[in-house]
Length: 403
Image (cartoon, rainbow, N blue to C red; front, side, top):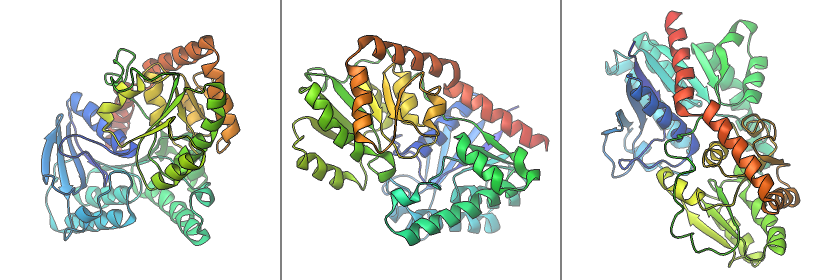
């Protein structure tokens, strides 16, 4: 039975289909796959400067909301700003009371908190089913991510209140990791526990696969190529990888570290590269559209994901889909998709020495590298394609409609 589904998230693809971060990539890939399965999908997102209000991309109707031009002005593809969330929610609240648009939708599916609340307001008014996805949490890690104790406490308080509130208000709440799902379950009344579900992230195996040719810009690079595809924000731990790389080049002097991504930590990372005299070995590529990343990953000898906190890491899944050996932080969200170390070399987070040792373990053994890469690729094909993930979420929609 074809469904009419509204996907809500403040960030989305631009008119060319380029995407900045992991949550909108998840929402967009899910939307594409649901559209392929015959459902009508509208991706409701925030306005983007110099982009159309309405656009159709890959079978999805994109609708961009604005509020006195304020949503447009807060656009940043590298991070979701608080004011953008606030203005988006405000616009959704207004439309829930004044507009008859989207009256025929069966499902309103909001991602994270403010879009989850927006989905609730719009869906309740229209008698639709409401789904909320929480893409991991920084609840236990705010002290590492901000030096301001007041801000850390405020964010913890907001998560503590909003996650169980949305559990109560929505028909189902989906989590992309098990740890925070269990924590929210402990915060919620027992009668709501069955509404809290976990569906780990997926990866586009048509785009990310071992048949992709390496980017010609990297073909002539000498020495092993170590790569990370991360937004340059504190929680992604790229600074620890920079420090680890100092030890790696002692063993492999011609090795290169390729960093794909951009963000507020860029200047801090550049300073650390200069302080360690690694300018000739480290390249900061900047932000690339997701469609360009496979050709870069194809040239990598090892992919490192040094995060402090993650849900089911899309960067890890993409590297495994490319049949690349991965070194990643031993943290919830990565442990599960790595099959607890079978598909990745797991190392302690925020530990440059151990990140270096894990990377050297791969570089020093072709057999180990091939074993890890093979295991990871098989895991992806069996469990993490978007075809499989969309089917899991589609079943949740159908269960909600039966309520």
